[in-house]
Image (cartoon, rainbow, N blue to C red):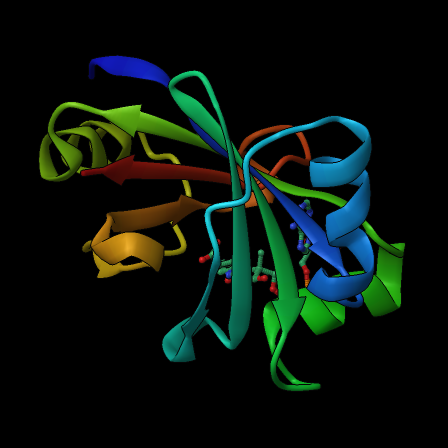
Length: 133
Ligand code: CMX
């Protein structure tokens, strides 16, 4: 598979509004606005850094993955997303290698990106997302 660069780092927060000021006012990152991704039960807020972004993730549902993550581990880094050239090809390669996937076929994520997650049990404890834009 060809990984191009880190697309974004997802950070689980209780409130995008409350967390926003550190990233924009203190670090001075531009703020790219919010988007609700119903399927993932999150409201995202993006702060671009060169070719990558910081993505704040606020849960919109107490049964959503971000809400469960915060309950168990507190606020913090939730996942790392790599931009790939060919998502289907990357997933086929991982499947061939017996890597446990959460998504065997791409889903649509924030910004219309095509995304798929690799299970943290297969990566040494880090939730990894592959994405193609
Ligand atoms: N990073 C690392 N480990 C994680 C994790 C994360 N983000 N979320 C859960 N885990 C761990 C749990 O701590 C648990 O470990 P232990 O068994 O050692 O306790 C294990 O994974 C299984 O967790 P679980 O609570 O039994 O299962 P969940 O129902 O919470 O599901 C996961 C975990 C990763 C499969 C689920 O959160 C998922 O499908 N995530 C992908 C989708 C997602 O996270 N969407 C939100 C972001 C969307 C976006 O960026 O747009």
